[in-house]
Amino acid sequence: MTTMREMTEEKNHLTGFSNEELAEFTLEIGEPKYRAKQIFKGLHERRLQNFDEMTDLPKALREKLNETATASVLRVESHYVSTDGTRRFLMKTHDNFPVETVFIPTENRDTICFSSQSGCPLKCDFCLTAKLGLLRNLTAGEIVEQIIIVLNDVYGVGEETPHGTNLVAMGAGEPFLNFENLIKALGIMADENGLFIVANRVTVSTAGIVPKIYEFAKLEKRPNLAISLSAPTDELRDKLMPINKRWNIEELLRAAKEVQKTLRRGERFTFEYVLLGGVNDSDKHARALAELLSKYDLQKVKINLIPHNSAEPLEYHPPEFEQVERFKKILESKNVSAYVRRPRGRDIYAACGQLAAKDSPNLIQKV
Ligand code: SAH
Image (cartoon, rainbow, N blue to C red; front, side, top):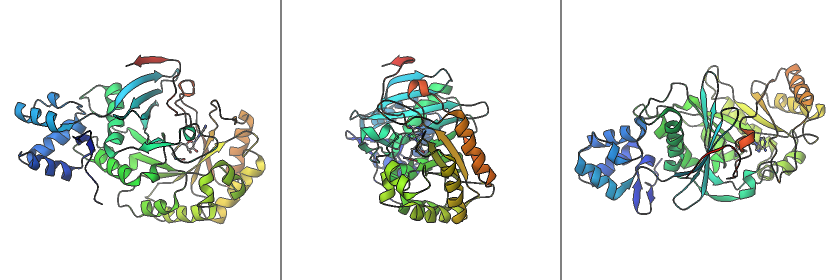
């Protein structure tokens, strides 16, 4: 796949350059090729966002880099910390579009939830990000830089990325509508001379861009996949997720079966189901969902049930706790594994579907 090298206001954003592009760039500025590897390590392994800190490079080269390139295009505008330890970073691009990234600590491993677009063009009725509309696609460099900023904040610049850190493309945006940049960014982050976060530590979530699901299934080093389903019938899904009018449940599940054929040993892919009180959470819906999966022979998937995270002006609310449990039990009784996703960071608008560049309490830093 060939991609355009990234420029920001006339400067090369090296964070979004692949190894090959960096090699080409160093040759262009009259430097030997081995410098490319040093720069790549400085940017990704040491997570430096400033060439002056790359003291293993000659001063003249650092100056040349400062003139022609940049290692930082995002600025953190505010930073919130939830009572449960979740952190939300509200960043801005050089042209002032919001980018949100969430750090979710758990006992055994940490997860970083990043955005693939500023805003989102899909109009899922229960999601706050949808209210922003699409502002623009993020570049590969902007995707990678989100993760670098979070890792530096949490673990410190230059400190090793803890083994086991997971990434999820579940922030703002529809990752499969920014496919090329997403895949390029994931390639850069998987490099063993860099962050070294390999594909099977990454989960990409899609609302159902069917042609891209087929493309995804063919990738050699494929991340894990999650598909947002949220309704067992076209009638209901059309209302909740209008993308369903473009590709309906049948087309979506046929594509899902294609991914199922390529599963690694022990890998299961996930369907997400946002539970909306009184809308898609009845016993009948649970049974219809189990039947649908069995019709397509997809019982081996796992279902993540996400009780709705409310936020003004969304009119939905989560079901009562007992109904969430009933829904889960019905699925399990039909041999479908179901898990309830514990909401994280609701108090700071960091939970699923709440990313909309909002100010919130618990601000710890405003730049
Ligand atoms: N556009 C992609 C990536 C977003 S992932 C997708 O739709 O899959 C975010 C997940 O949170 C999706 O499963 C989405 O359905 C879910 N979600 C959106 N709004 C929500 C809300 N208010 N409460 C709970 N989950 C929500």
